[in-house]
Image (cartoon, rainbow, N blue to C red; front, side, top):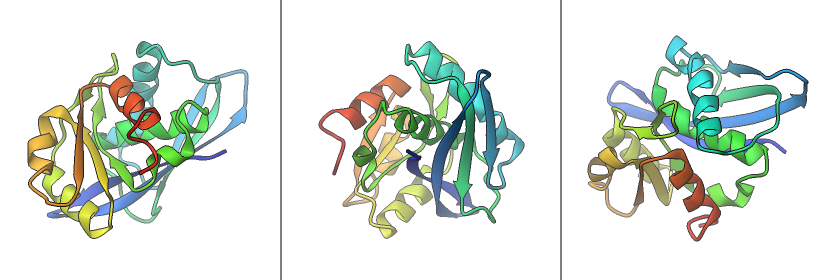
Length: 175
């Protein structure tokens, strides 16, 4: 099963939808490869993401992970991809059901302890999410007010990876 999460990357004053896909092959050693034109800050996210998952008390399979950021021909340059990368990994590991992310997008940088940090560019991301008919946007708590400026989109503020995960597993999943 491929874990798939939706997010956005900003391009100047606009934002583009990005699909985050996670797959793995069995391996005795843990390895992560991020593809799809990631910048150095996105490549470094693998260390933040797996530390955040582990320090949030979430178990995952040791494997060789491939994270694809599509479309592959657009450079992705933001730590705001951390949260969707983590969620795609949790989906791939069967921790979050795949139906949980129907018409939901996520943004947020993760700290090593699993807390979600605020990010830049939330307003253009919320505008693009509405344009793309996304129903729900999960954002860092500090960015919620900015995202809520846009009508007809539900904004879910989160302070941690665990909180986002609980929302997706609980009543919020499967919109």
